[in-house]
Image (cartoon, rainbow, N blue to C red):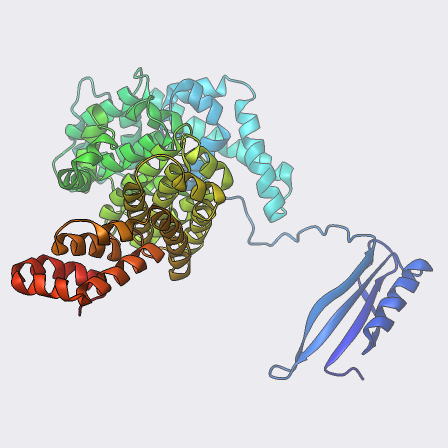
Length: 569
């Protein structure tokens, strides 16, 4: 009898036959050798050895495959469940959001050529006649739907094709019959509000109102013009109640499909916008009130947030008023998908990509709770930050820098703007490699500004690193490397010694030394430590005590610096 851990050998004598247990043993090597011998002697076409471990709690064996050799198993046909049936059974099923989305994908080219949406196709007799006369378009679309569905459910593909052919014929006939009978009222002679009031309570009110709204778009080309016409219809809708909801729901369904198309969105917001500008414009359109408040707080945001005007501004006002909630949620999700996708926001401008990403982060955070949760926003920017710490992006980000100091400053800014612990670590590694390089030290020690100016620059860089919210280890490593370079520069210039020996009043010399020690004019490290030691020595000198005692008011401005330098509580 096999123990708590044993090995089982299974074989298949022929390719289509099922696995059969050959033996069970507690010796792993014995099971493997027996399997290879059976395969070598052609007693089986395939062998498999599994490790079986007894779970003392459940008294069941957990199986792990150790070895598989021989002919692969033939794919098994999926057994069709009696509950399996086509996804769409009646023409009404084609009007659901999921079905319209699928129609939009399989008929994408035809819809784009005709400049319409799936919702319009399902409600306009002229479009149905045009599609029917197009020849193979319908047949190809049915095949694109039926074949994947057959593979997923196991239903015969030919039966699915015949089913969807009948379904499409019924749906087309329904729309064309409605057109011939004049079921869709013409708004040329009747007001939209009157039509909505008359349709309220009828059985086919949604279908008829959809035909009325789609018919109002006949002859209007271009996404911007179509959006303008839809906003005109919204202005003419009844003021309240079920009739208003009937109109607004139909308009919203077309808007969702119109703005879901990348080309349509680009035309509405402006074809000159890049990916980042387009996303910023969408956020401004969806949440104009929040964006205006941010711009009022920080006017610089107005330079990065594209203006939204015309029909898009009219739509934004309605979205801000709480109308079209499905459209608002759809646009917000689209922004998140694009942020998590691989496309660059500003392909030719890496620093500009950081700027627009920061703007989007502030904008979406301001709208969190109304459109998206704060967690969703944070996760999207963590995912986007992964693309900001890749070698390709970092190279393009610092390619314009002529000095290594410029690279260090740019990389520090990158550390500030990425989010997520792993992304922060990756950005910190790029910065650490820069400030610990021989090139950085050589350039900072070379000709150029005075030693005092170099120390001031390094102190500012060190403060920026501390403000970048890196881990304690990375902050200490990078800040320490900057401090070592600063200490070398200070030692070569003997700046602390010169300040101590300068023919200047003692309070003035103490002020300069304390600024060095406090990290204001020199980075923390050897330079600050030497300045601190010199300031302590000077404080202990009898002449300094006498000078400060004679003028106590000169000690007041020094107290803050002393606390910053760690010389006072």
